[in-house]
Image (cartoon, rainbow, N blue to C red; front, top):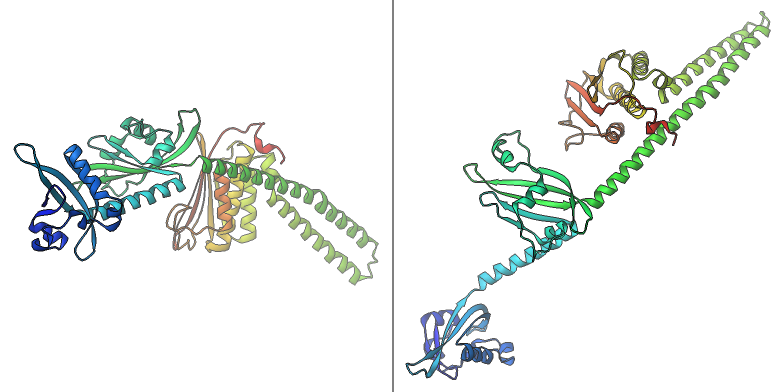
Length: 467
């Protein structure tokens, strides 16, 4: 603290002022108070304006730079007040200065981080929020106001709005599923359709994490809300295009299979018939010629069988004519004959029909899974289970081979190795809004599981249309 005369010269110098500004009392007495301001403030007459405010209003409070004896600067909080005698005559001014440089640096750093956070949230189209579980008080970031379509100056965050956003029973989450239980999973997530005040709608993805006291009591909930409208639209478009590609591929395989059967197989059958006629025309004395014709006929038989097998594998006619059970039964039997791996089909013979795209998806999953068993598992057997239960059908392909060493959880997890064939199976299941999973353990085998929605086959099934 220091005091000034009515003209601004120092009349009293406190020890704290000496420690803060570096001048001794002897040096400071009689010094004009503007000496403690930086040169740019003196040039702009800031000291004079502050004194004028004190004379007008009786007091000045503010912040600004101050200069020490050694020329260094610090940010100061300053209070200047009038000193008057009993008759009201102005005696001078009392000045209280407090060094708040550290607080200022902290505030500037905080402001910088908040600015960076706001910029990052804006770029990511993501807002953040915090909920005090004891008081129900909420705090939203500015980006969250923008995402929800609210004006920060006119809207106060409420628990009711939070409940709309998260769409969960928070009390149940916090108290009935304790985070101390290992099976509890965070973050809590929800995806909702949010209608803005202008009538438009956005798709919002909210993620929430709880914060607890040392005793396990829930204190706060913090989270983020991301506008995923455009991403959702792009994913929907991608799924639609992927579905069209799958349908086109299946249709092309069906066409090629039909062409192979109707052209290549029939042509080879005709060649076989002509070879028979040639053999009859060759004299019995021409043994070499007759043996050559016989060998050529055997080769023709092999080609016919192989082409027919390829045709049926590309699109088995039994799938269209009889449904899943005969098609899978035929495929499992043929797989066992070709690979030497015993394939056991566990499926009700009166399984019934499903929509064509569902039947094709199940057949392709079994086909790809058994191919992987043959190529990678070293298993001597495989079990195919197809069970229809209520509104869903469960498909499992299990082997007892060497397993997948790096596979630790459901397909798509961080430890899962996925090949092109596995990715194709997962994509087919996703197109039908099903669930796909692979579980495996070293030396214990692998189980591929797909759960698909099941309904009776409909004549107007989209996949019936050629693409």
